[in-house]
Image 1 (cartoon, rainbow, N blue to C red):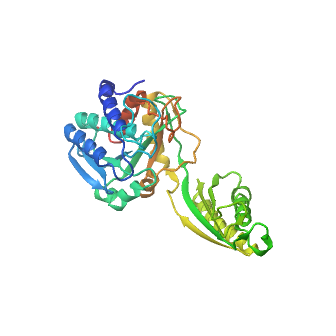
Image 2 (tube, helix red, strand yellow):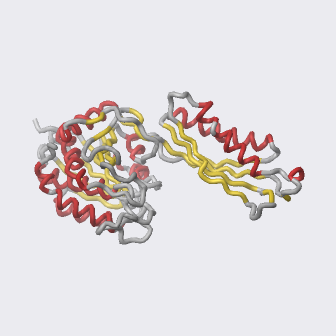
Image 3 (tube, one colour):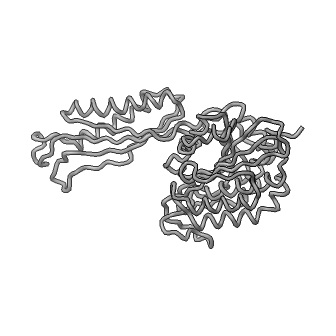
Length: 388
């Protein structure tokens, strides 16, 4: 694999960083120790500027190229937070914090961007400016949005932005990407159905919310099967069904349903929302009950820009020798989408091999991917801002 020689030499050191971060996971915005670790490494590298506290606990750093004739600024992003999962890997560097683990590889992402930062700060073999973005709260906290609201793009003049995520099931060190929609939006709904509680022996005197809610669950499946173009992708899941009944002979007065809607299409995201409200409210009304729907918007669709996807794929090709540049989109969501809504850019997958899937208690980032991941960041910078 034609990785950067210097980054191959740094492999053991970067792996040590990764293992340290893995053993000390932090959640959401509470990544103070992780951010401090990042800042100390960046100081060691001699980067030009370091600003902590962006998006609450994010870190932004700047590396100027050897030449300063090209007015181009590229952002490179890694996420830092872990998940509220009890680790079951048995690793000698497993999480030391009960109930928390790096089950999505953000320890690897952070370490790879640190490795690339050290290389870029040492060589400065580019003409322009690199902005390093270490983000908190990717796992449901919208840390990417928080950093953008703190002026990330305008304050540092970022013109293009790129990110990377590991992909279990893809061979270690190989890359996959596609232009357009790559990862889904994710919204949540909460439906409270109110009827009339009563005795199970006299259902005619009650309005059975369990029955009503069951009809709503079934009817909601028509959003995907009968509202959406079969070529498009929408996933609707009712994840919880909770009644206020405490015994088998009680007809519940209220039922609560919670679920998610995921789509790769902005138009169908809006259509799905409208249909969830209509189906829940009208179905309940037909039975003489009432439904109150609360909709919580989540991450938007992750959409790669056409040109920037080509740049990212070319850098991956240079590093790995081949790249899948027409990868299948997937339905998990990613808050890098907020950054891509503000600037053109691309998100790429790097192979994690035959491992447990992300968010599994036995998942672990494959350290063998480190040289390729670091090299992709560095290669992208040197290709987009060459010294001529």
